[in-house]
Amino acid sequence: MNLSHLLHRAGSAALLLSLTACQTPGASSGTGPAPSPTGTASPAVVVAAGDIADCDSDRDEATAAMLDSIEGTVLTLGDNVYPDGSAEDYARCYAPSWGRHKQRTRPVPGNHEYHSAKARPYFDYFGEAAGEPGKGYYSYELGTWHVVALNSELPEPGLREQEQWLREDLKAHPARCTLAYLHRPLFSSGMGRDNSVVKGLWEVLYEAGADVVLAGHDHFYERFAPQTPEGVADAERGLLELVVGTGGKDLYAFGPTLANSEVRLANTFGLVKLTLEEDGYAWEFLQVGGTVRDEGRGTCH
Image (cartoon, rainbow, N blue to C red):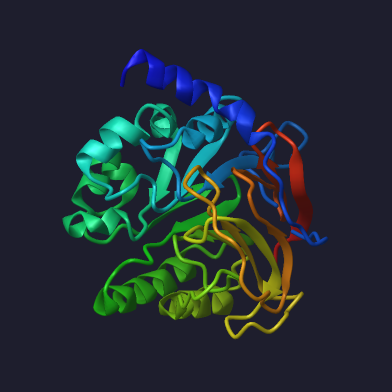
């Protein structure tokens, strides 16, 4: 990358501050790590976005710069690098920006990773952090929370196998609070989308009493009130879904608004920050520049 291009990438973050957004009001749903001296658990933090890096743009540099000043675990929500998730794409386009946070990143793949055969460059780049090659789903603990990384891009037999794994994993880790993340959202007000392939995963999460689902795929920010896999509002047991496809790739317009959609932000790049407390959570959507565009709290089931 030559000097003029580097200067162009570094200077574009200021332009992003002028982006406008469309929003409807709303708010809602937190957790924590090791016990503090007072006997309570101190919070864990995750920072997430999907649809991130492209060598034809420097918006991923702007969101990566935000990560520089936020501690915590970084979650990628798929389509981590364009156009094809190739080894060259990761080396040239992802590594110089979000790649500097690789050691604290827990990724999932998106459909663009699978433009390369079996997403091999993705698994090679992230190594053990990406889970078993060919599967790409795994779980871990953050503070008092159980966290599940899922792969929405598997073929039908792989999805069914993943659902069974998820069911067993959640039985083996009956945490008070559970967070799941994957590339495709079950619910989105994006135009012409059908991601019903992930409904089975949602059904397992709902049955187990999980709390929050993060997704990308649609290049905007949208928050849904807690709901069932059938799209019925359920304040007591429903899953709060945040669609955060705002990591740097081109943004999308909204289509018709789905039921239970509470906040929609277009033309806004940024990150979601989740503070995971002992029995609840708090979220903030931070646009480039640091302005909080959406925030709220929730209690675990």
